[in-house]
Image (tube, rainbow, N blue to C red; front, side, top):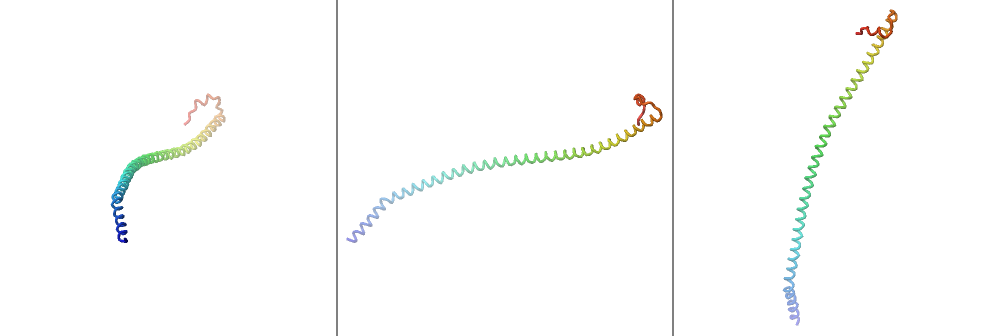
Length: 138
C-alpha cells in the first residue's frame, strides 16, 4: 500500500510534469519573446534618442562656433573703437595745447595792438578807425 501511494505520487508528479512542462516552456518562451521585444523596443528608443542627442549636440556646436565668431568680431571692433578713442583723446590734448598756444599768441598780439594804439596816440596819429586800415602788420 505504501509503495502504491509512492508510485501514485510519482505518477502524479510525472503526470503534472507532462501536463504543465510544455505549458511552462511555452510561458517561458512567451516571456522570453516579450523580454526580447522590450529589449528591441528599448534599443530602438535608445538609438532614436542618440540620433536626437547627436543632432542637438551638433546644433549646439554650430551655435557655439557662431558665438565665438561674433565674440571675436566684437572684440576686434572694440579694439578698433578703443584705438579710435585713444587717437581722439590724443588729438584733443594736441588741440587743447594748440588752443593754449593760440590764446597766448592772441594775448601777445592784443598787447602789441594796444602798444601800437598807444604809440599812435603819443605820436598824434588820429584813431578814427580809417587810419588803421592802412597799417601793415607783419
